[in-house]
Amino acid sequence: METIDVLIIGAGVAGAACARELSKRKLSICVLEREEDVCCGTTKANSAIVHAGFDAATGSLMAKLNVRGNELMGPLCEDLGVDLKNIGSLVVCTSEEDIPGLQALLDRGVANGVKDLRIVRGEELRELEPNLADEVVAALWAPTASIVNPFQLNWALAENALANGAEFDFNTEVTGVVRDGDCWLVSTPGEEYRARCVINAAGVYADSIHNMVSDDKMEITPRRGQYFVLDTTAGRHVGHTVFQLPTKLGKGVLVTPTTAGNLLVGPTAEDIDEKEGTDTTAAGLQELLAKAPLSVKNIPFRETITSFSGLRAHRAEHDFAIGEVEGAPGFIDCAAIESPGLTSAPAIGEMVAEIVDGILHPEMRDDFIATREGIPNVEWATDEQWAALIEKDPAYGRVICRCRKVTEAQIVSAIHHPLGARSLDGIKRRTEACMGRCQAGFCTPKIMEILDRELSDLAFSDVTKAGPGSELIVGRDKELEGGDVA
Image (cartoon, rainbow, N blue to C red; front, side, top):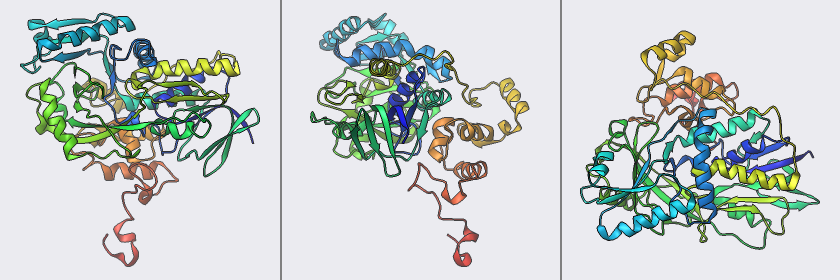
């Protein structure tokens, strides 16, 4: 059995960031993912905010890695072709009695190293954000906050790691981790892997993986957050990310634009037992309807096109758990990565790579590929830019997703890019097809036909929404036994 230098469990944004950073070194790297693609867990369902860094407790890993991640995010997204918009954020309060709370956030942010924070009021505040609720009296202004496309970021990090030699095995669930001499033996239903270092980036399942190797047990509680997504017709209702004063359960209900032009409202925060409990509830969505108007008025909820929920990997200590596990040499936790985990991902990659450096002492590569080319976005292209794309490839002129103006060429590119899409959700995350007003109602059959045509090992009836078990059809009408209509 070949021995791998570094085996990473989990292909979310934290695992992918670790893989990319480690691929700068002369190491063999393999990433195992239990789902069918990257970005299938927490990373696919969050607020997509690059936080400034004022919320986390001073001295915590969250604070340190948030601020460092914010610094790294801009250059990283430019290198990897990821959508990022520096729009700034506002934390609002609706009572003069809450002003000390804003001041405490400002003081904490300054202590954490966040730049240019200040409290704004009156006319200046209304000029910044005209649709703030009338009751809002002041806000903490953080100009270094941004919004990012989390799907692109996760995929781009993984794809760039692949370009630099990392390997990815999907539909591969880890069932056991045991010490094997000076290495780790990692079991899956299909095969075993032997690795000198193991990085546990398994999201809400990171406690289960950790507890396979340590007597000091970890407990991660899935913290569910529910959201509304409003159509692009509502995307300019606010120009900044608008937070409410945080509570012990998190940063509260926010209202923010997205890089795709939508308006996002959420999340709720509720601790649940089910690690797959990504259902939405009537009570949760009603909570959003009640709380969001406390900070932003006249939210056009009639423009809602979908709702969703995501799970944050929360633990009672409320800090990231990153480091070599005591009594388990070469086993590194990258666990409890909840908000601001997306922001912190580039810095998490740096930190984990430094830990690996201290264990394996690898040489740095001189041929690292730092950039990658993304998929052109026709929706935001000018007529001239679109015409140039069509001249290059006529398939850019065949629109498949009418809501988001996604063309056949973009879908084909998503399939054939490294770590290409093999499911409807994979196409969605890479191109934003199916994310518009009709929510895949019109474009699904066409995308299925393109997947069938472009992937020789994937039959039309085998196309899934999100991997095995989510097949969309049982067959074509005329191919069914007896010719009966399905």
